[in-house]
Amino acid sequence: MNCTRKILNGNRVIPVVVINDKEDVLPIAESLLKGGVSIIEITLRSECALSAIETVAKELPEMKVGAGTVLSPKQYEDAVNAGSKFIVSPGLTDELAIESKKHPLKFIPGVATPSEIIKATQIHGFSFLKLFPAEIFGGLKALKAYQSVFQDVCFCPTGGVVASNYLEYLALPNVACVGGSWIVPNEAIRDKDWEIIYKMAKSVAMNI
Ligand code: 3PG
Image (cartoon, rainbow, N blue to C red; front, side, top):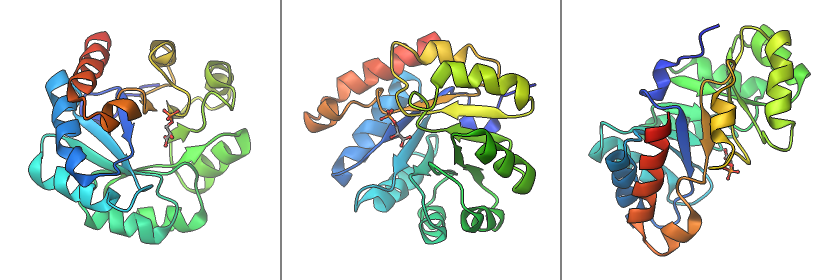
């Protein structure tokens, strides 16, 4: 099985970011790029999330910007219109699957259990899935168990993936990438300490 994905722009770690002040998005994205990380997932958990996506899509074309926490077809469409290059959801509904087929960009739906994986793969035809929240739903052990059962599925574990465990996740053959907020710590955003984000990105880029 080959879990390499074009969507990842050469990256294997997706920084998951909540932007509360839209002035922060460019310094964050620029720090990630400077550190060697050229992908960012901006979650639709704040009022300015869509405009933050729009800003990155316009100002930093070398950055692959995606929308996360997409829960409804309307949010999916809004995220596409804002310029998202990929869409991530913590779960999967029939409505989201239908919406995703209307757009050419990559959709990474979330799953946690075997039945959800069967539905996502057999009914909706997805083979690249977010395992969420990874650490709560078995983490490394679950992925090892899923490997022999779901041989054609690649995962992006997210939720509880941190600096101390992400390399173990990336070492699994059915893991294409991991997602996490640890690369862009809340305190760094609060303090507008972009150097920390640059350093986090650099250490991640050097390790993979
Ligand atoms: C997500 O939306 O994918 C998660 O909230 C990120 O989880 P983390 O904060 O545990 O990295």
